[in-house]
Length: 323
Image 1 (tube, rainbow, N blue to C red):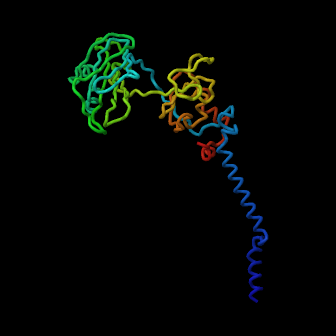
Image 2 (image 1 turned 180 degrees about the horizontal axis):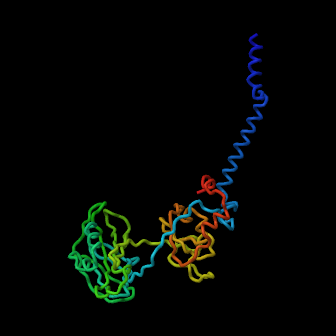
Image 3 (image 1 turned 90 degrees about the horizontal axis):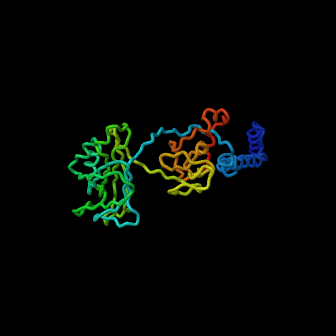
């Protein structure tokens, strides 16, 4: 009786769905096939750039869901240059630097400048900076790049980091007689902050920050761009022998001159055509949050036209895309 009841219960339970115990291996095989198909799909989507579906292997890229915003920059003329001489000894006893100017200017060095006092001085007007009791200015005329020796009389003891004083601050400022016809965004002063290596702070000696003082009173921090060459390596010059002349080429296509600087990494490495294809910097792999143009070049194709040509939802690809 118990055996018959057990067979009846199994037949009833399996018979309601039309399945039997003999069908279970086939079900497991189907589930395994579906899992393998899903894994293959993920691998395919992660390697689309390699097999040429999107990226460099495709003539037109998939449209981006949200392109990085373009920042409008204003070109500013800087009449001064300041840099530390390479392969020259540098210390608290003296600093060898190179300076050039296209206008008459005043220059001063501030050794052991307190950070708070320095910024309070810089936010004043040009007349306030030139009349500061902390600075002793020397007048010079316009000249090409030439050497300049900066030295201090008293030895500095800045103590261990974090410090409240900069080792050296160099200020190059226009003469007050030459600022009457300047535009509001013209540069009236260049401020360079120099770190000097010592036993308590072994970081290499270098210019760690530069600020621009404009005629309208604004103070801006001058940031360096990292320009890449044709092979994707950081170079100081530009590539030669191209049809575009002596200009650096895009590190992705190596055919068009680079015209886009990426933020926040500040790598200038892409052209206008390759920028919409990427969401990360090809040099450092950091996310592209915005960009600005360093050449006068028109946009290759508006985002609206790209979305009309490629209406496929990019979010699915962003989910599995290889980064």
